Length: 350
Image (tube, rainbow, N blue to C red; front, side):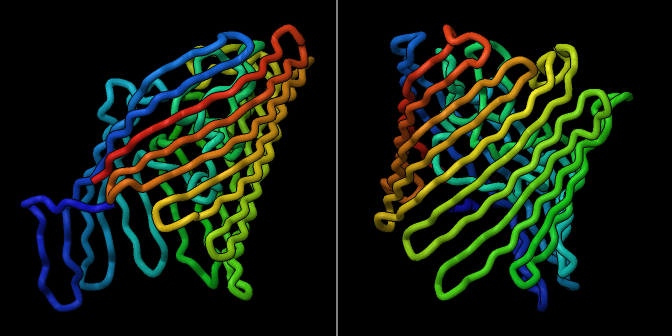
């Protein structure tokens, strides 16, 4: 992403010191989504997503790097229905990196981000959540099973936190984060992520895992994820599986997302193949299966997706994604739902 230096950029020309800089970058994305399923026939929607990022980075004479970053969601509401800002500072050196503030947790740093089916929205519902879903969550209603790529891990995300990222040590790296309490009776959310990357005969291999724990005794949310990626030249294969559990609690409108009143146990498996057709075109295909085991009910979602990403020009990208899905409601077959979603988007970045 091309960075624009502000007039206030400070250029440090001292021996042993890097150039300090203030940069601004961002993007605007326009998208069109068409949903066709057993419940709505056809539902077409338009949406957008836009952010502006401002960052400052500097390096001291002793090699200590530090800085800050603010990410501003400038749409009235983004595709999750909320204004989504991030703000944090960091200090880094040979010891690793410490981040303070509202930013992604340790688990998200080590999860698999591949393919596009999981970003298509909400399966089994007449109105998709365009662009992305925040987490894998249980079925809140009979025909509304929300699952992302199965690799998301709970409600932590951009909560205020302290995070440590280790340096890479012979291909091995890890991260740990702890979020502050959101109430007098709440506990701190903790996250851990681990990744190992190596190359064997020109074949790249990445193995990783992540964990999220809400820390609550009566309202427990725990998630784990494991991943394996294999790449060779222009082709990459990704495999991942995750488990997310919620303890049985009463509905609580003060929590996000709203808890169900029964224990839930979600298992999700994802397989993705990606192919770089040329320098500007990437193709992907994926298969996802997720089962939500709620007390007295077993819901299952199966989805197959295909995607194309094309770089029209530097900073201008077009994406096309399609998936078909089948949702089975274990409590009431009348709520079963089959359908497909197609999403096209164009994005300009600077």
